[in-house]
Image (cartoon, rainbow, N blue to C red; front, side, top):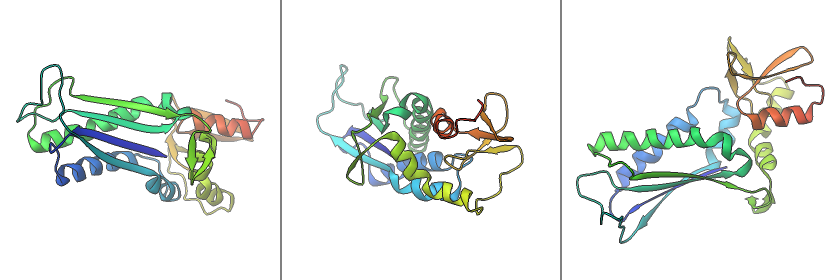
Length: 208
Protein backbone atom coordinates (compact mmCIF):
# COMPACT_ATOMS: atom_id res chain seq x y z
CA UNK A 1 0.00 0.00 0.00
CA UNK A 2 1.61 3.19 -1.19
CA UNK A 3 0.00 6.47 -2.23
CA UNK A 4 2.01 9.30 -3.73
CA UNK A 5 0.30 12.68 -4.12
CA UNK A 6 2.11 15.42 -6.03
CA UNK A 7 0.88 18.97 -5.43
CA UNK A 8 1.97 21.68 -7.88
CA UNK A 9 0.82 25.13 -9.07
CA UNK A 10 -2.16 25.12 -11.39
CA UNK A 11 -1.11 24.73 -15.03
CA UNK A 12 2.57 24.10 -14.28
CA UNK A 13 2.45 20.46 -15.39
CA UNK A 14 0.63 19.12 -18.44
CA UNK A 15 -0.60 15.58 -19.01
CA UNK A 16 2.69 14.55 -20.64
CA UNK A 17 4.62 15.85 -17.65
CA UNK A 18 2.40 13.96 -15.26
CA UNK A 19 2.65 10.75 -17.28
CA UNK A 20 6.43 11.07 -17.44
CA UNK A 21 6.81 11.77 -13.72
CA UNK A 22 4.53 8.98 -12.57
CA UNK A 23 6.05 6.58 -15.10
CA UNK A 24 9.57 7.34 -13.93
CA UNK A 25 8.65 6.71 -10.29
CA UNK A 26 6.85 3.46 -11.10
CA UNK A 27 9.79 2.24 -13.21
CA UNK A 28 12.16 2.94 -10.32
CA UNK A 29 9.89 1.51 -7.62
CA UNK A 30 8.57 -1.58 -9.38
CA UNK A 31 11.84 -2.19 -11.21
CA UNK A 32 13.87 -2.59 -8.02
CA UNK A 33 15.91 -5.82 -8.10
CA UNK A 34 14.56 -8.89 -6.36
CA UNK A 35 10.83 -8.62 -7.05
CA UNK A 36 9.07 -11.80 -8.17
CA UNK A 37 6.05 -11.82 -10.44
CA UNK A 38 3.88 -13.03 -7.55
CA UNK A 39 4.69 -10.02 -5.39
CA UNK A 40 4.41 -7.61 -8.31
CA UNK A 41 0.88 -8.83 -9.01
CA UNK A 42 -0.07 -7.50 -5.58
CA UNK A 43 2.21 -4.45 -5.42
CA UNK A 44 1.20 -2.94 -8.79
CA UNK A 45 -2.53 -2.40 -8.02
CA UNK A 46 -1.81 -1.14 -4.49
CA UNK A 47 0.63 1.56 -5.65
CA UNK A 48 -1.18 4.79 -6.52
CA UNK A 49 0.01 8.15 -7.85
CA UNK A 50 -2.21 11.24 -8.05
CA UNK A 51 -1.67 14.91 -8.86
CA UNK A 52 -3.27 17.91 -7.21
CA UNK A 53 -3.21 21.41 -8.70
CA UNK A 54 -3.16 24.28 -6.24
CA UNK A 55 -4.30 27.78 -7.22
CA UNK A 56 -2.56 31.00 -6.23
CA UNK A 57 0.73 29.33 -5.28
CA UNK A 58 3.08 31.73 -3.53
CA UNK A 59 6.30 31.46 -1.57
CA UNK A 60 8.02 34.20 0.39
CA UNK A 61 9.65 35.22 -2.91
CA UNK A 62 6.31 35.52 -4.70
CA UNK A 63 4.78 33.35 -7.44
CA UNK A 64 6.86 30.70 -9.27
CA UNK A 65 9.16 32.15 -11.93
CA UNK A 66 8.66 31.20 -15.57
CA UNK A 67 11.38 29.07 -17.12
CA UNK A 68 12.20 27.30 -13.89
CA UNK A 69 11.00 24.00 -12.53
CA UNK A 70 7.64 24.38 -10.79
CA UNK A 71 7.63 23.86 -7.04
CA UNK A 72 6.27 20.53 -5.84
CA UNK A 73 5.10 19.17 -2.51
CA UNK A 74 5.14 15.36 -2.67
CA UNK A 75 3.45 13.28 0.02
CA UNK A 76 4.08 9.53 0.14
CA UNK A 77 1.73 7.59 2.42
CA UNK A 78 2.36 4.04 3.68
CA UNK A 79 1.85 2.01 6.86
CA UNK A 80 3.54 3.64 9.85
CA UNK A 81 5.49 0.48 10.70
CA UNK A 82 7.33 0.83 7.38
CA UNK A 83 7.88 4.58 7.56
CA UNK A 84 11.28 4.89 9.23
CA UNK A 85 12.97 2.16 7.22
CA UNK A 86 11.47 3.16 3.86
CA UNK A 87 11.62 6.97 4.03
CA UNK A 88 15.14 7.55 2.68
CA UNK A 89 14.62 5.02 -0.12
CA UNK A 90 11.32 6.56 -1.23
CA UNK A 91 12.63 10.13 -1.01
CA UNK A 92 15.50 9.10 -3.28
CA UNK A 93 13.13 7.56 -5.83
CA UNK A 94 10.93 10.66 -5.92
CA UNK A 95 13.97 12.95 -6.25
CA UNK A 96 15.32 10.89 -9.16
CA UNK A 97 11.95 10.83 -10.94
CA UNK A 98 11.58 14.61 -10.60
CA UNK A 99 15.13 15.16 -11.80
CA UNK A 100 14.41 13.14 -14.95
CA UNK A 101 11.43 15.37 -15.73
CA UNK A 102 13.46 18.53 -15.03
CA UNK A 103 16.26 17.36 -17.33
CA UNK A 104 13.84 16.47 -20.12
CA UNK A 105 12.12 19.86 -19.92
CA UNK A 106 15.36 21.78 -19.53
CA UNK A 107 14.16 23.17 -16.22
CA UNK A 108 16.53 24.61 -13.66
CA UNK A 109 15.11 23.70 -10.27
CA UNK A 110 15.68 26.33 -7.56
CA UNK A 111 16.86 24.94 -4.26
CA UNK A 112 14.03 24.53 -1.79
CA UNK A 113 11.40 24.02 -4.50
CA UNK A 114 10.99 20.26 -3.99
CA UNK A 115 9.71 18.97 -0.67
CA UNK A 116 8.97 15.30 -0.01
CA UNK A 117 7.05 14.10 3.02
CA UNK A 118 6.74 10.42 3.95
CA UNK A 119 3.70 9.86 6.17
CA UNK A 120 2.90 6.71 8.12
CA UNK A 121 -0.63 5.52 8.83
CA UNK A 122 -1.03 3.89 12.28
CA UNK A 123 -2.36 0.36 12.66
CA UNK A 124 -6.14 0.36 12.75
CA UNK A 125 -6.30 3.52 10.64
CA UNK A 126 -5.49 1.63 7.45
CA UNK A 127 -8.58 0.54 5.54
CA UNK A 128 -7.73 -2.55 3.47
CA UNK A 129 -10.69 -3.20 1.19
CA UNK A 130 -12.70 -0.95 3.49
CA UNK A 131 -11.88 -2.83 6.71
CA UNK A 132 -9.56 -1.63 9.53
CA UNK A 133 -6.16 -3.26 9.13
CA UNK A 134 -2.61 -3.23 10.43
CA UNK A 135 0.74 -3.10 8.65
CA UNK A 136 0.95 -6.87 9.21
CA UNK A 137 -2.40 -7.33 7.49
CA UNK A 138 -1.18 -5.31 4.51
CA UNK A 139 2.03 -7.36 4.35
CA UNK A 140 0.04 -10.60 4.50
CA UNK A 141 -2.14 -9.40 1.62
CA UNK A 142 0.85 -8.37 -0.51
CA UNK A 143 2.71 -11.64 0.09
CA UNK A 144 -0.17 -14.11 -0.08
CA UNK A 145 0.65 -15.41 -3.56
CA UNK A 146 4.38 -15.46 -2.85
CA UNK A 147 4.01 -17.56 0.28
CA UNK A 148 1.69 -19.96 -1.52
CA UNK A 149 4.24 -20.42 -4.33
CA UNK A 150 7.00 -21.12 -1.82
CA UNK A 151 4.89 -23.62 0.11
CA UNK A 152 3.75 -25.58 -2.95
CA UNK A 153 7.20 -25.59 -4.55
CA UNK A 154 6.36 -23.42 -7.58
CA UNK A 155 8.48 -20.41 -6.59
CA UNK A 156 11.11 -19.35 -9.12
CA UNK A 157 14.69 -20.50 -8.35
CA UNK A 158 16.87 -18.06 -6.44
CA UNK A 159 19.69 -16.57 -8.56
CA UNK A 160 23.24 -17.41 -7.52
CA UNK A 161 24.65 -15.03 -4.93
CA UNK A 162 21.23 -14.03 -3.66
CA UNK A 163 19.08 -15.22 -0.78
CA UNK A 164 15.31 -15.76 -0.67
CA UNK A 165 13.14 -13.56 1.50
CA UNK A 166 10.54 -16.12 2.65
CA UNK A 167 8.07 -13.41 3.66
CA UNK A 168 7.72 -11.24 0.57
CA UNK A 169 9.38 -13.49 -2.00
CA UNK A 170 12.05 -11.00 -3.03
CA UNK A 171 15.65 -12.07 -3.39
CA UNK A 172 18.40 -10.08 -1.72
CA UNK A 173 22.15 -9.88 -2.25
CA UNK A 174 24.11 -12.03 0.20
CA UNK A 175 26.81 -9.66 1.34
CA UNK A 176 27.90 -7.16 3.93
CA UNK A 177 24.97 -5.51 5.65
CA UNK A 178 22.46 -8.12 4.50
CA UNK A 179 19.60 -8.91 6.89
CA UNK A 180 20.09 -12.65 7.42
CA UNK A 181 18.46 -15.35 9.52
CA UNK A 182 19.43 -19.01 9.95
CA UNK A 183 16.56 -21.45 10.35
CA UNK A 184 16.81 -25.23 10.28
CA UNK A 185 20.09 -25.11 8.41
CA UNK A 186 18.84 -22.68 5.75
CA UNK A 187 20.26 -19.20 5.29
CA UNK A 188 17.53 -16.68 4.52
CA UNK A 189 17.78 -13.03 3.53
CA UNK A 190 15.31 -10.22 4.07
CA UNK A 191 14.60 -7.05 2.13
CA UNK A 192 13.65 -5.13 5.27
CA UNK A 193 13.51 -5.35 9.05
CA UNK A 194 9.72 -5.63 8.73
CA UNK A 195 10.01 -8.88 6.77
CA UNK A 196 12.77 -10.21 9.03
CA UNK A 197 10.90 -9.43 12.25
CA UNK A 198 7.72 -10.94 10.83
CA UNK A 199 9.54 -14.18 10.00
CA UNK A 200 11.34 -14.38 13.33
CA UNK A 201 8.05 -13.81 15.16
CA UNK A 202 6.49 -16.72 13.27
CA UNK A 203 9.55 -19.00 13.67
CA UNK A 204 10.79 -18.93 17.29
CA UNK A 205 13.84 -21.07 16.45
CA UNK A 206 15.19 -18.63 13.86
CA UNK A 207 18.64 -17.22 14.67
CA UNK A 208 19.40 -13.63 13.70
